[in-house]
Length: 468
Image (cartoon, rainbow, N blue to C red):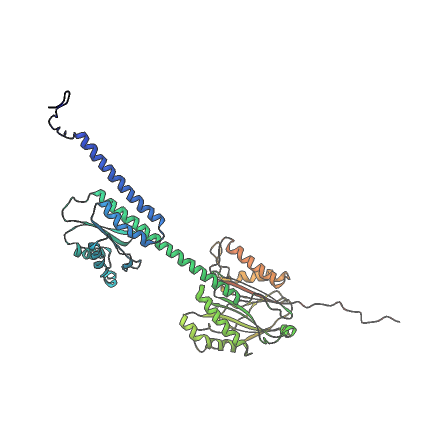
């Protein structure tokens, strides 16, 4: 018998049914947990977007996050290159046999099949058809991955044929994952474009340094004359060219200063690296021709024949003014291959003359004849060589600097009696004021100033002697 005071076991207690309020609380708790989980998943994906520097690592997360947010069994991400080709290396799917089968099926599409789809709707239909071949009648939801209004891929989630349909919330989550994927793809494209520009900037900088080394870093000393020169490229590498070449490079010292010099100004049509490379090629050819000692018209004729093939392949032409100057006679001989004629300011009278001669562009046709002219320069005369980047420069009002303004500027600078360098500085200052200090030139601008030194008048001595 049970001891005194012992309690007999009663009948088993029955579980009380949940009240409506308790059921609602459980449902809300469940929804709250799901919302927190979804927020954590989206936060994790956003963190990966900010943190990952490798696009592939981010894309690997996309199918997993998409499937969990939508309550799906699996997901597939298809990505395209900017040109529309399938980015096979970035096909991503949730792990498993079904995911592998989806990747293989989509990867079997050829680039030709994809590029043949002229409209986005046709491309989407083709991809959906390939996915359906693997999934059969399983549930499937898909959305496009868009970057800068261009379709860059397709995101799929799938599940068993039977089950609750996906809600609008699930679809919005799927679209949000697709949008974040589009941002990641666009970021990668911008990074690659930035790197490409950095490489190009380095190439341009190197090209500019090489070109600067090819142009004369100083003007030579020529007996009885002054020289000043400057090239201002519109880009880091330009097509303008000027040179001073001794006709007898083996001479040195005083003999070299009194020897004849070739003074050249040219312009390769176009800008940037291609024009700079052609300018470099032309420089080598011309320097070799100068050693022949031929007159200017023959120099241009032979140069045109030599450069014909290279210029024809590049579809570019060259304007070139070639002259040689003899300090002893002050004789300037010249020929012109359709370049801007230099301007000769005569000290006597203050007039300006254009130094021109008939001739075609270098590279225009294989056989071309060039005229030859010559002038004897007087003390104080100034010759200005220039490229069309000077006269074609556009000012604040939209007008061009033109030849007439250049002539007026040359007259003003030369009348002052300034040295060659001061004249050049005044001309560029006038050009800068016209263009505007905060604006850049649209084309390379180069000028070379040759000034004949004025004769030195010695004081006369009284020849008559007084009586001793």
